[in-house]
Image (tube, rainbow, N blue to C red):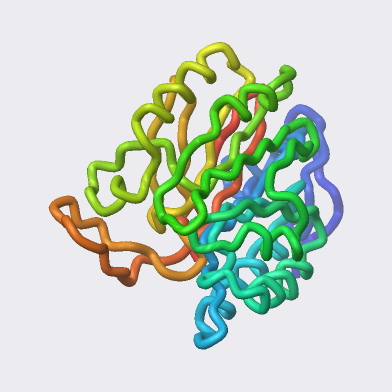
Length: 276
Ligand SMILES: [Fe+2]
């Protein structure tokens, strides 16, 4: 039986009982040290591309699993972003399903549109898709990169310029990634070079923009525009195969779905990928 009486180590600090030592500190080499305070980080969680469909339960179940994973996090994120393609066809009933699942989350949930979304139908359920909101000391700015009836995107850089103000550490969120992926079918559905260059110029004078987060590509990817790191979040359901020589549509594969956690620490953003 374990002796629960607090003991003292050589410098007179009470040793925690085995039951109360946090697991991360419970190795033989550290058990005698009181854990140093380590404050919680402000945190934005990101889900992407659920593609809810009326004729297939799999995307719905996958979104439920992703939401359950966020609910189980300790500490919980300050807010959640869903970075587009909530629906597969843009049917209002697909948004109703997405809302029913996402409303389980206790923190604010922000959405933005992807090329599969119907912006009006999405806004009817979730509200305006362009916003500047705070998640603790982090600012989240979203921009709509969709073009009605098309799968590629545009970045409304002039409109964005007026919205990327202030000095708060900012995450800029959009569906289409302002990257060249090196994979033709992905780049065919990306954003034009002139938009990427204009965005790079805009960001050069805005060092408070710490990260750009996107979806759309159904793979994890990292790049940069104007010196700002771009993080592409995998989907909550299907991922696309990495076929560097592909010229036509990419097949989905068995890569696991995932989500991201963007933490603010010492004025900078760190992005964690979590596989599901
Ligand atoms: Fe997309």
